[in-house]
Image (tube, rainbow, N blue to C red; front, top):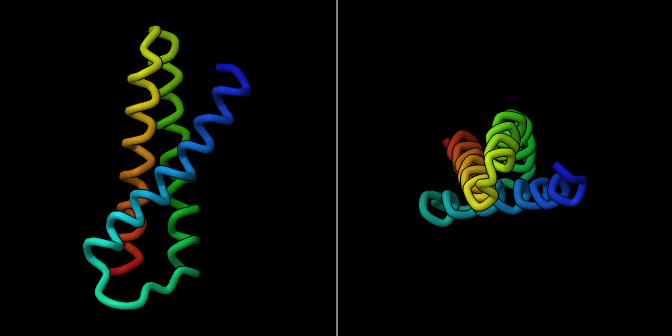
Length: 90
């Protein structure tokens, strides 16, 4: 995987984790959300999921399935954001 591809996946990870959290908050938050703890939860969730999601993406790229790599990585990171927001709000 090239450095440019890695940069793209890191950017995608940040966006998708935030989108996942935002989707959960829009749907389930009932009032003000304290973002300090949420940002820590998102950081921890990203660290927990990133390596396995990246391994799946690399495997897909090696099999000439770049579209699958991007899709599965995005889904994993978005789910991490959703779960982090869920844990933070509960």
